Image 1: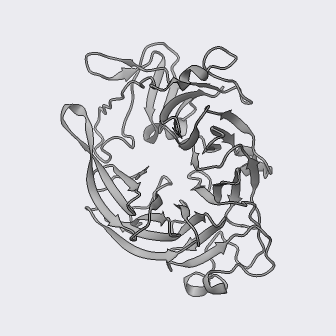
Image 2 (image 1 turned 90 degrees about the horizontal axis):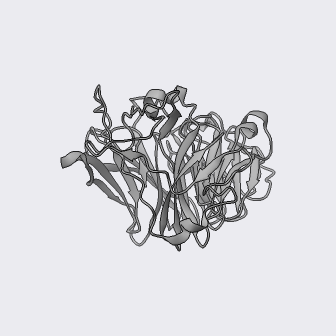
Length: 409
């Protein structure tokens, strides 16, 4: 599931890739008593007898031009990619193109957020591929585990060239390259902050950073414990990358030196293993918390992926629910040697679970925490020097959704 980062027909949209082989769009609608519901908005069946495995929106980078069409890329269990165009004025999705991308499951498909005519895909065949959506099915590159000597080959063994015979900016065709993923590629995310930076993860327990201007070899290679099923860049801290590592729990990487100084590895800022579980889902909160110089509580929250986008008022109001304690007993095992339920790592960051709940005002149901300002990232993006972030994880076997507060000192 992924939220669209812009309003569509005046509403926030949630895209869902489901096991029936469909892409569903649900819209967030305000209902009575200041609550919200998700209502069906649009539906598109990909193929019969397949599972929809992933989706991505073409709006991952801030500052999207208003004249750019809103598109969705999806992948399925038969190895196909599906490019759809969503109608911003109302319901409905239109197929732009469908093509065979992988011989096995296409675990993930993702847009290049800086060049939205380019999409990437990763499959159980161990390949990472780039595609030019102006001519669906045209391969920009096809990576393999060994180093090639000749041109990058596309479908049918012919050299890959986009429409017009010219290479897309940022891609080097006809050059040798290497890919170090040795198993299925199951997570890809283009950086919304740094142009030409791409992160990929695989069952081979490696996270790779790429400079898309040259796919000869990755910028950096970081081994982890566990297959990397999800990768998420932090919404405002451009160097932080969050990874769901299955039996290895979850990890936060600092990629700044790898990107800026071409270091071949990037340090682990925090790594946390959940007992008796497989972490499949991770994400950051798009709210950030800023320490106030005084202890007077403050609340300054505007729109977010969970509000009615495009309908911002002069005095925005938003309701948060207190994070509930998990019914699962695994919380009792999360305390570390510091005795505070958190653990210190290389950067001095501290992780706490469960989230310390924000105080609830009984009169209006709004939440605050003493000395904390909860800010809308749209209004405060450039000033986002917060010392605390929220992140969520979900895990298999124990069936638990965890909400964490990470204090990075």
